Image (cartoon, rainbow, N blue to C red; front, top):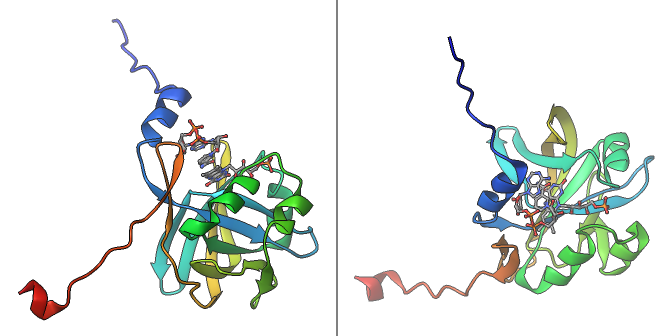
Length: 176
Ligand SMILES: NC(=O)c1ccc[n+]([C@@H]2O[C@H](COP(=O)([O-])OP(=O)(O)OC[C@H]3O[C@@H](n4cnc5c(N)ncnc54)[C@H](O)[C@@H]3O)[C@@H](O)[C@H]2O)c1
Ligand SMILES: Cc1cc2c(cc1C)N(C[C@H](O)[C@H](O)[C@H](O)COP(=O)(O)O)c1[nH]c(=O)[nH]c(=O)c1N2
C-alpha cells in the first residue's frame, strides 16, 4: 500500500501568507531582577476578561527572552501612528539601552516600563507559558492599565507600518 503524505507548509510560504494580515503593534517591556528589556510584538491577543488576560508570543531566540522569563512581569504598550520610529528601534539588533533611550517611560503596579504617549498600555504578571515551535506563548494577567494616550492606532500590514485613518462618525440624526 502506498502512503501519501501531505507536504508540510514551508516556513517562508507561511510568512508570505501572514504578511497579508494586519496587526496592531506593541512594545512588550519588562524590568526586574533579570534586567530591563523590550521587543516589538504583533503576536498579542486578548484571551479573557475575567480575569483580564492577554497572550504574547515571544521567540525564545530574542535577546529579551531571558529578562522576560526571570522578571515574570511585562507591559504591553500599544503604539500610536506617531510611534512607528520606536517600533523600528525595538524590532531587533539595537542594544537595549539605545531602545529605551528613544522614548520616555513611567511605571505602573509591576514596575515594567510604560511608554509615555502609548495608545494604551496593559501592565501584566505572567501567569502561564506554553512552548510552541520557536516561541513561548505567555499568558499575562492584566493588573493595571495606563491612561490612554490618544491618537490613531499603528498597524503593521504588508511588511509596512500604516496609521489608521481618522474616521469621522456622523451624528446619529445626520445618518438617519
Ligand atoms: N511573531 C513573530 O515572531 C514576528 C512577527 C512579525 C515579525 N517578526 C520578525 O520581524 C522581522 C520583519 O518581519 P516582516 O514582517 O518584515 O517579514 P517576514 O516575511 O519575516 O514576516 C511576515 C509575517 O510572518 C509572520 N512571522 C514572521 N516571522 C515569524 C516567526 N518567527 N514566527 C511566527 N510568525 C512570524 C509575521 O506575521 C510577519 O508579519 C522578521 O525578522 C520577522 O521574523 C516576527
Ligand atoms: C512589526 C514587528 C512585529 C514583531 C517583531 C518585529 C517586528 C518588526 N518581532 C521581532 C522582534 O521584535 C525582534 O526579534 C526582537 O526585537 C528581538 O530581536 P533581538 O534578539 O533583540 O535583536 C516579534 N518577535 C516576537 O518574538 N514576537 C512578536 O510578536 C514579534 N512581532
